[in-house]
Length: 321
Image (cartoon, rainbow, N blue to C red; front, top):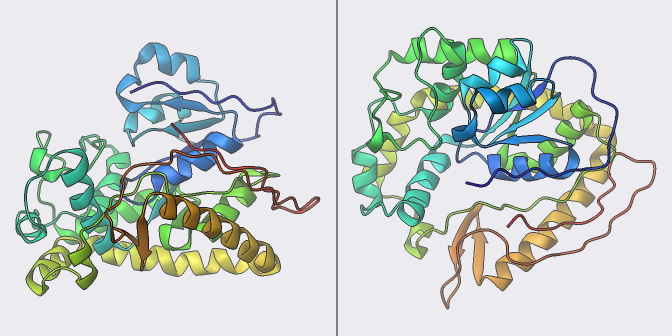
């Protein structure tokens, strides 16, 4: 993996502890990182290269993007670092992992077989958060592939203990947790929290294409197994979603701008999906009648939408290649 460093115009360093994006896989973290790269003068550290020399070079950074979550970020961000992340519906995230692994990792199973093989307690959201608690907990992997768990990351834990650890980390380290299903509001809350004067348009840059038969959803037994395996994540997600409502209420005065931003992003999404012969149905991506092309973007879309003197000032949108 390349070490990518996007430079933006120099600006005064943000006061206070570092802000760290702790990306939990299959929750829209790639799209968040795209926004961060565009809006920040950021150090981008692929997690497998997070060694002492590189960490020493980034120690003074006030903004850090992690390619994947890793507790070693605390070695240079400091215990006072402010973290943010996104969550999504746990069942959708579980299905997303299956389709991603089938396309990217060559996983050769049906969705029903995948569901049957899930650990009793899969719960990747809670586990990735709990990994920041320390106490000998294994570091979070780059993707939650439980079938390759050589470090015991998915070792069975009592549900109440896992939930308590995750909630403790959220309360101690995460001033902001967004929702993939409400990404436009999440982007505005990020902009407000981080003091941005512009907000890039976003587009999903890491999506997995589902089978057309998946439009009917998984069979009842597979769905029940996935729900059981993500029961802790469901509680966690519901609690975070309730707290998100309180945060989103602060955007009432920006509602027109949020809606305009969402519409502009949707227009770009429509262009990209049309080019790739893909369909968006209920938040999931499916191939069109003639098949479809998976993966990220391969086109540049320039979409001026200037709003001088307002929070929203969308300049352009370019793909990450």
